[in-house]
Length: 147
Image (cartoon, rainbow, N blue to C red; front, side, top):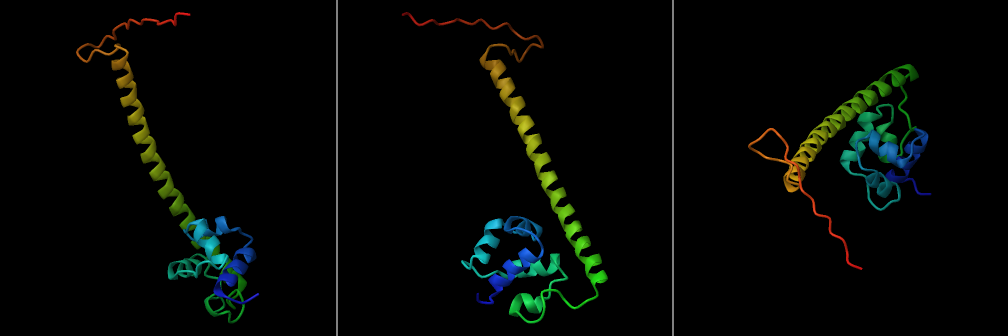
């Protein structure tokens, strides 16, 4: 197997005990970007490489880019374990908050749509009189098929 940056990213994913999807999410990229990179369809973009180095500061950039040295930087392990989870967790929490905010906005819009549809349904059934607070009784005609 050739030692390409694509292969090293795949090695890193396995080293971190992740799959393509969880790794992609951890660096804020679409799973297809990582999948296509690992499969050799695309070379990793600068954004992908930068995100890897930011989210996983313990990864040796020389190894990642050129295959030189070891997968992890030669820093004391205590420093590495202190840095990695903090950066990752802060970024993960930030993304969760963004997603929560987006979902809250979407939910609010859906609630408004439901209310509008409810009012339209009332009008269509003749139960809504915009000039009155009292609902009208609708008259229904049941159509039966003649057999």
